[in-house]
View 1 (cartoon, rainbow, N blue to C red):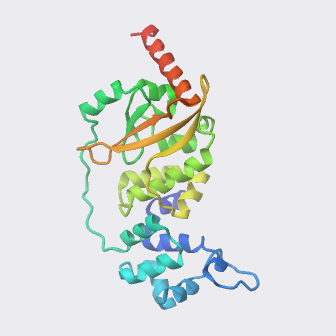
View 2 (cartoon, rainbow, N blue to C red):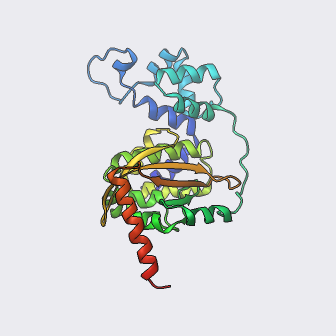
View 3 (cartoon, one colour):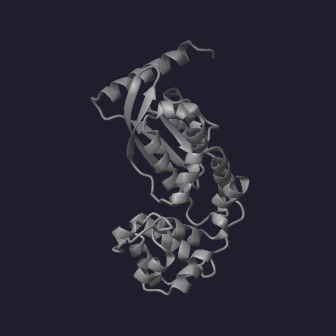
Length: 287
């Protein structure tokens, strides 16, 4: 199990090959125009079928999957993207994997939430928090913590989502939510899979969560943006909220995440009630 987790974290040192193999296994032969006769021993397309459809030799495609040729031409990558039925985001990700790797800087600057962003958190009347690229919560306003304890500073959102029993309670759309965040992690980390912190995070999640292992093995890629989700709160009930993400200028990789409800909806009323309860608790609680 530990070996499998380590391989998942670093894709076995062959990110391009791992991606091609995973996406190949997700394409049904009939969707690629290949008639199915009898029992097939492998899920999805065979290597030789991908090679034929992409117009390359089977030996060359095998070298790509095995990591013996890691810099294919743009034309080959575009052909493979078409065969594997990749969307625009996944195609862009494939292009990044196929480019010559440059030396990654050994260290990153210390992560500090700018003072202005901390002030903004305190003044916002909606739940908001700041995370780094690994989903560590670095700062949060009281309303965010009141909305969900999984938004408290010091929490890793990914680990909590996959391992904390409260996550499935607070997120009725947990299945969809988990699939989305894994695809976003793939997109945001990109080709920097040799990042030690990233490897440790993926390794820990792979050991602790079977669902994470399955989702990570799919190699789905999706950029995160504005979306909606439901949070079940034990005091005020279900809230259908929008989630926005904003890059913190001058802080590499930090995101400000804001939850809000459409005006005039039941969720807006419930969020206002939660804000009132949170403010009352701050006034009457210990100083």
